[in-house]
Amino acid sequence: MALRKILVLNGPNLNLLGTRQPEIYGHDTLDDIAARLTAQGEALGLAVECRQTNHEGVLVDWLHQAKREGVHAVLLNAGAYTHTSIALLDAILATELKVIEVHLSDPETREPFRHLSYVGMAAIDCVKGLGAKSYEVALERAAAL
Ligand code: CA2
Image 1 (cartoon, protein in one colour):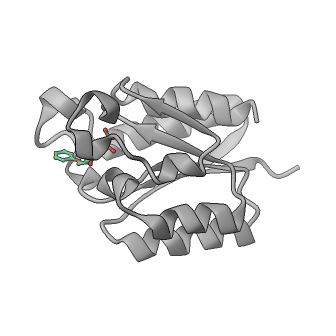
Image 2 (tube, protein in one colour):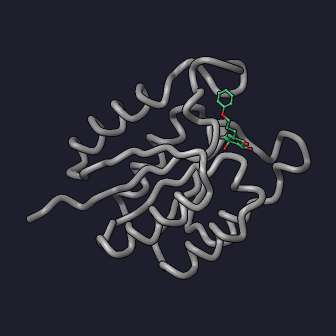
């Protein structure tokens, strides 16, 4: 039987991870995180695919594609689009995908403009504030869905 697929989608500026603001986002690069998630996925019997884009519409397109391809769950760190994007909220609602919101930091303890999450209005779960470990906890939760 084919492995269940988990898509890990990362939004704007997350390609800079590990190079700037390590006091907030840690020292791991996105490639480090992707490598660990892939290995963790193999242990859990999941096929993990990680992607990053700086473009809102590309995230919307990837959610539509995930629905068409029958992806089991999506881990979504939409970066700043978390707090602004009704398009992403609509895409999650329209696709009815199981989306787990992920954040390295805890936006609710940061500036007030980060307290609102449009992604959170449609996501089934949220893991935040654990640095790169947020993705690993989210993947464990996705495996249990
Ligand atoms: O904590 C998170 O994971 C965030 O989604 C990160 C976003 C931020 O806008 C959200 O409020 C919380 C920002 C990602 C920017 O990534 C950088 C990585 C390295 C250096 C600078 C920015």
